[in-house]
Length: 287
Image (cartoon, rainbow, N blue to C red; front, side, top):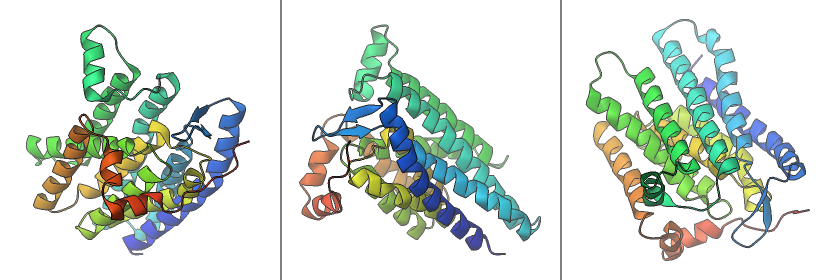
């Protein structure tokens, strides 16, 4: 069986689970009072992005279940390794995001704000999240590398994972924006020689979830945005050297730019991006 079939199974299961679990999660969050106002003041369930995370992990697990059909060859081992990395990356970054979503103030401080607070003796929830995400990304990068890989490769891979995770999180300020951005980045990664299977898994989970986000019924939160971005980064790690460096620089620039300007204002200033950003938005049920 071709690895492409496993990934097709993974993407389909991810989309289905994300689509089915998210509304149940939204109702549970409403009952628990986990509601936050969005940019229009509409009360939205957060962190509903855990439905997307469950979809991605379920898709990875489904692919693992059909993996023995491929035997014990090198391709089978490669797919098994990728699936383990996916689950570890999703659950690790989601747990860090969940802590920030539930215990944080909701104020966006940026890197400068978190480090300024730390210098003043305050350990912000955002700083805790950053530390955990960094550790998870380093661990996944280490687990993926062969013994012959150098430190430079490890550093580039860990930075790409972390920068991508935070870049998608920075887009989670309007309904559907982070999901659309992640889908575009995942597609670009696959087209650029990245891991098309991981990209398909991310896109599948995102497609299953996005409708609830666009209807302003659910918000990803850090719990969903960080893992989604990390999956994009995981796909990009297999791009050829120059393209991977370009990806890393792009993600790093988004992170740095966010310290000085609003990413949303840059999107609004570009008519094609603004039109894509608004596509599909509409009111949902907010009772």
